[in-house]
Length: 213
Image (cartoon, rainbow, N blue to C red):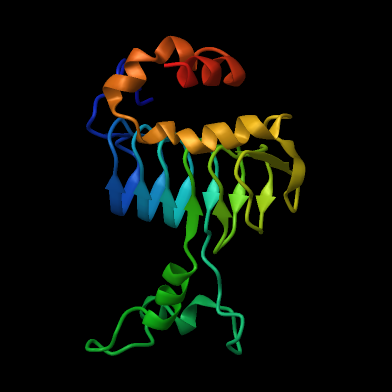
């Protein structure tokens, strides 16, 4: 079994068994075992646990993604007479000559155009599936096992199949507004480290301390 590093560094920590293609990493990023990333941008301090699959997606900073999550699983061309791979991966089935294109760019460009966007400080629970074109707002929580087919508003909690609003993350909407206005995830590392004791308090106490500085 692969061992996690005892301490992360600014360079990304990527498990040896992970599969990485066209990925841009931020700092202090961690990618777990057997996770597959394709055409993904992942921001500072975000992490993805084991056995996840993520394609055509941007992920903000300080976002937590649990194990066995699927983000933007490949759509099939529903408008064609068949949904099968052979129309857009014909090379796999011996249907192409040596000088022909292995993959149909129409389908793969379509998938890229329907990217998923995940904000900052998002928590995505175990086994979640997020379908093509969905946007997850900053500070949102996606409950374990949820199937997300529609956009999720910032600082809300959604659960279920299909995922539906459970409640706001904070009862007082002013807390959400104040946190969103701070955009603390863009602060310099030094400021975040200095204010670590405040981050360890509840949100209202944190805001009171920060706004009094």
